[in-house]
Amino acid sequence: MKFQEKQRLREKRRTRIRSKVTGTPSRPRLNVYRSTQHIYAQVIDDVRGHTLVSACSVDPALRESLKTGGNLEAAKAVGKLVAERALAEGINTVVFDRGGYLYHGRVQALADSAREGGLQF
Image (tube, rainbow, N blue to C red):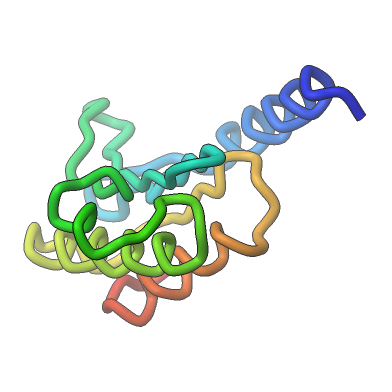
């Protein structure tokens, strides 16, 4: 399968998911984006259109401790960091938005780590 076809199918899944999942001020959306080299997570309030908390494998807090940003270790570290930052902002419950990716591998590791960090979804 060509790369363009994979991207088109992922965008189709992403829009289908986003039509059902929205973040509110009481329960914001935890969005995940993954590239080949890094992984990113944001907690977003869709009503106001603001990012409340974010973490990524490029973050200076994680950059020194991670060998690479595109593996399971990095995803677990980013999940833990986004959970810590969300709890510091008073956010306990979120809605998980996998961004069109399969709930497997790095996306699942990030979600499990965020749950272990104290976020509920």
